[in-house]
Image (cartoon, rainbow, N blue to C red; front, side):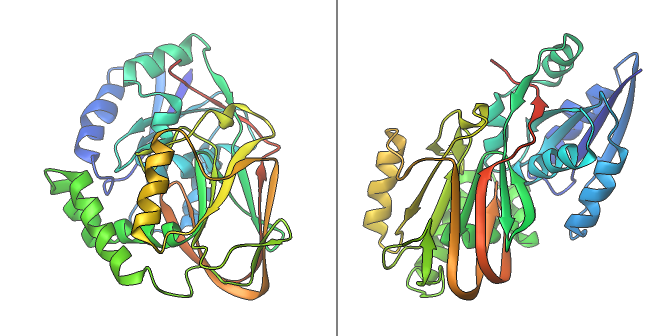
Length: 307
């Protein structure tokens, strides 16, 4: 019997829609065993990831019905399970970069493609911190200002307001701009004694960005590096000046991303430092970091893609 595992959270911005378009629709399936895995607010990430990985079996379809953070957790669980399972994503979050990368689909289309065996290989990034595995990132990974700013939208009060806001993008932009104006001149956004592949980064650098998917934060276009087993796109940015940031944003919209193709990036710090990192919208503060390595994972996974 085919098995479907629906990964969801009641704190996803558009959970009400997910309940109608995914959970309710799953009750109509025949010949399927359906399991629901709820990711609860403030739950321990590593423990939740382990628990999800434990229930995944060979041949399962794992459907993440939520935002980018939920999709990334589901992807990590599929890889950590050690079995051949298939990942699908439906967008019910703020920016939904993961769903945009795979192509947006309704529930019926995902089920039909899975039953027909129409899946693609997806090559995520692997991030290692201090020479230990940290996470797999499907679409993008950032270090610095943008990673820290992502925490603004993860605040529980903000997320609750987002579920009720008439214009979520406008509300999100307003919150992020207020944070930016308050924090753009801080000197601890990235340690100044940072090197990228043994080259000291320019003064006032605020961000490192690795792109693997089609978009970042719903607006900056990327590409199809997730189809490549070895390469991704990466670069550094200096976003303290709003004029400079706007110019780079316009260039990015025109397809001119700062940086270049890479096969492996290593960020090193002259002394252990605290930095914010972010994979698909989930930002975390890491302490005592001396080295961050970003490369393509040697483990691919199957995904349902709308192509």
